[in-house]
Image (cartoon, rainbow, N blue to C red; front, top):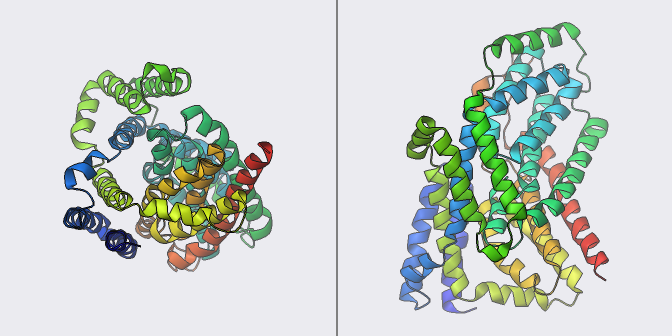
Length: 445
């Protein structure tokens, strides 16, 4: 390892470690790390700041921003409030069904909007049901934990659900259709396994009495709270139509036209915002996710500086030199990706690991490498409560909800409360990632 590789990789790793330890200062940490990386790269003769910024995948940032604006339009239409009410009715507010129904709802919602938006819109409804129906610490921990894992799986199911998948789409690693056709079935298998184990082995509602009166009261209260909330079709129809046009363009526009996914996003979001002029202008001015953009921009700068040193190529060659088969090398890489994501969170891990994955994809089927990587990153982001940005948000929202048990004791949702669910989710999703990769490799032999 050269001096430049050691210094710049140390800056990257230190920034990732500090942002994981101090999540409330993560944007400040990575911004400072990006500045230091640019300074070090310049002084060490690796690359100047202009070159590093030119290598930033701006198309990925465009996709992230424009999809975020479309998600906010759908949220403003009250679509997700209605979906939460439907989930309440389907579950009957019965604790034995509530976990499964809301996990499926979060999986579906997270495939269309980002995890944070999904949680902010759906989780408060579940909190109300938990307060009204009576509960205990074990049930709260497992129900909210399964919801977070389902949220991560939904984000990994589609190319527009979460940052790792968006990064694959924006960089052209996989087309929209190829990713959807491969990732969606795999995430459904993982979700089904998670729900089966939770329902029949863990049984979080075990010992909780089935109380039809409490369930009826909970349903009545939820219906009353949402009686005047109806779907705003003036917002929903243009936003949904624009999103469907974007999906159709991703699926069917020939690549020979030179119209990339970022341009489709840009035009589709502009259409949705223009069709809702006043709200569209308001969201464009005030609804941009500046925090996410600044965080990812700084992350791309640090990763780019390390890439220019040739370190990722060195790691790829080291992986290729392992005295095992190509399939074994891929399995080691996927397991390592899951563990690193659990430590450093999904965004940083995916941005760095994708450089190594590109090397593996030259020798192995790209779908096995890239979809396997997306699933492994999903597994890692489900391992600890701090591994995904949705975790601390769920913790904060639960604390504000002030849920209590039958004896009036406050119920928590912290790091150790989530850990059993996280370990189960990690094991299931990582096994799915490796199993999927093995299945793809077996088909090409």
